[in-house]
Image 1 (tube, rainbow, N blue to C red):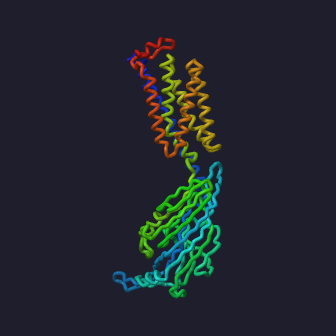
Image 2: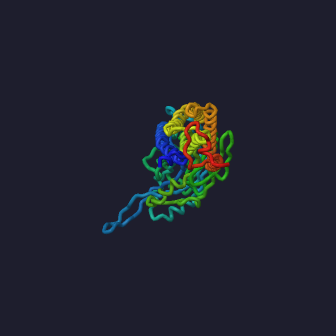
Length: 448
């Protein structure tokens, strides 16, 4: 048993155990990244409190109060108040986003001011049909036009608001449309005498990171443009047309009432509409491709692999060059490699990921390479090991930068690494004793 413990196989198993032990500091680094991400989220929320959060903008809706005659069991008939909602026939929205970045401490968030122009039309035929088919009496003189806005703190200015060409003003309201607050305009349907309703709105809406819209019409057309080169289109519908270039993006959506799970008209008792509203939103997120924390998380996922690869390189020098490295020395090298991820995280928050990666990698390469010169007692071997470690970090950066192709590139690198290890160790006698420094190589090398 004692002799077996001195074999190359036992050495490899011991190195494997040490590599697994290094998952503990890597897990701590992963927790630290999550903690810093939470701090960034808190900072973004602080920015949103003073500027406006993720915004959702709907179209104008007509809400009519109603009175319904009901007969409770064992009681005389009584009138019960309610409401019915009617959506526009057509809704055209033109949005121009002015984007910028706001800082909170060392953290930044993308913010915008959207200049939105809305034009909605309600058909007289729809209003007459819904009114005639209702089981309640419409109180048309007290109707309201309501506009949903997710975060009213971001409503900076209303430049235009008119109904059938006549200027009106928004009023605040305690009512809500699903999860969102609304601003309202009183409207007298009875005074319109069955005429169609045309609504024009121009407003400025500030928000943070994302703008979603709601298809609150039988036919909804949305055009959006912004000087942001990395938009992420998300939600219930992707744009039919889009153009993304160095100067920003433009996109166009067209949705029908058939594309959503609620109709043109409902009353206050229809709870299914409230649940379906958030699922129908669509729009854009001001995406930041592979931000600092995403890159740190991605680097950490390959941490164990690259620590193991470095240990394997040490082992090959030890076996093929008839050298000896103590397990404690492997452990110290592993600690230096794990420290790389802490330094990378700390620096990347201050100077950006690319520069932080270069500095952290260079520091670890110099430390481990210098240590290898002393441990292996060979300057050339230490320099070669440092060069191999630099190549490993270069491959890791390529994996991080690959984004969508990271898995493919990582699989190919892993396959090539395994093939290279098999080639370099093809002549090793794994049953031979690990040689003392200066012993003949025959003890570890098989026959050619």
